[in-house]
Length: 394
Image 1 (spheres, rainbow, N blue to C red):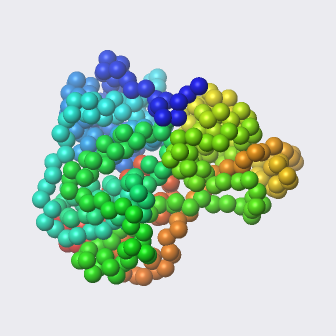
Image 2: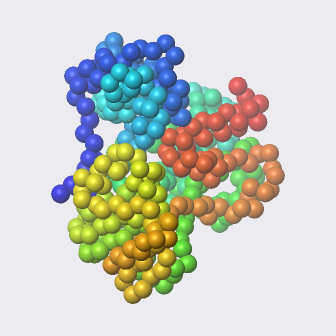
Image 3: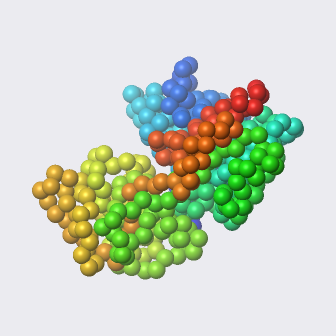
């Protein structure tokens, strides 16, 4: 049985990594780099690895993406850089994510000093939320000399990276490592700071913060009326509770509603902790499941049954009744616990966005259509540039 606290994906050896990089066509236009939302520029770091310059390759990643190690582990590369890879038309795409993971491990094991701190002599910027978008924005602003403080409502930092993604996909060691890189840039971190209670727009302005970024993410799970007063949990709460406790109460029959990565994270987590019958029911067909290929393969390997094309209709006793999308079939599943992974929303007061103040900015899941770590990083970079422009910097 797999271990919850041990990452499933093993790092490539140096020999395998260099052999894989040698397959690169060294494209002049580097379509893989064009296909990376986070701008990590895999074309450049693979080129360095191709010529056995491991230090330079690691530096290329870190120059472009302060969360390069996290990205390497959780990005659905088959939708982005691997999909764009020119090798696809010859045999198979380069394993870009695995090469990135290898290089970040090399950086850590070699104790490379890749962060160059600059003097923080420019204006103060407050960031509410320490998820991937807020962390990226903080790093980008610190590079340009801005005094950045991140305010986080939880005890620990990282947002969904820490409290949502299971450890078998993303170990806390890499998260803590990359948080420390941002701290080395001079970014200040303040925990247990609840917006609206401990801090407000007015209090931050009074403390001379010239720009305020809300990067609070979609931290509230959606639910359905038919599951009211039933033995049901929303996925975000379930994953957070299990990740904190490193255990869950054993249950025989688990039904998970949803077809994305979060749904499959819940399913695999349940299997790891001994739940015998775990079924995932999605409105999408199996061919159109939004979950990443890696997540799907892991779920099938662990004998998790995935049923596509059904919508929950009602709950009777310990049974969840589903109707097929075409209305022709019915599905009845026994459930000791139902987990809803049907999307997330923000608990940020919508009035904040309506204040129409030029010094307020928003990034990450609360503004992006694609709810992935890599797109949150992209959003963090873009909003940092907007803040810099607003503050009159370069």
